[in-house]
Image (cartoon, rainbow, N blue to C red; front, side):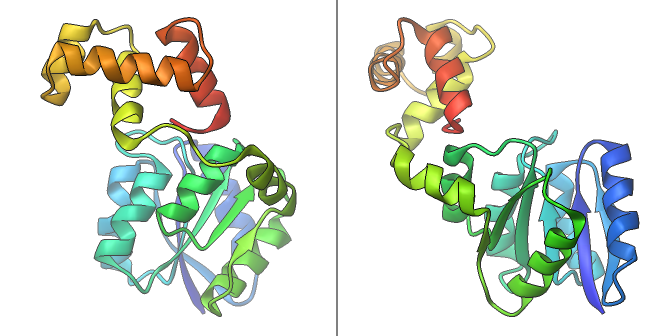
Length: 201
């Protein structure tokens, strides 16, 4: 039996996925969590072979959880299953060490097959999304520009962002200016929106 963890913050979706996967004769959903920051502990506690992660979860995103798993449980395979089929998310997920990336509107049989395939050492990527990611090109934002833009998303002023990220206000201003320029936005709010739409944040 393949030991699987499901990480999904929407209870109904998580339980439906668990029920569908349990119909497969070779898959056993041994753990379920609703928060990204609970993934690593659950994987270690339940000796999980494949972790199926949503992207947008409280505590930690699925992409951040995938990166944590690479360090804490390198033998555990990671499948990202998300509603948000954005090319930028795909690139970031692969950089974080995910083995598969699927959108949730795919049939349940595809998820089950992806779980089997990643366990055999294969990579599984939604083909339409893979083509879009290649056409889109790389994320133009540096890690620090992403940090500053994300910190600006809740309307924080430069002084608050500087304090939060331990930077000077001038440095924050420079990073925001570069992020606005790279996203071809008119202001920081539009830069945040555009970067999110692309999956860069």
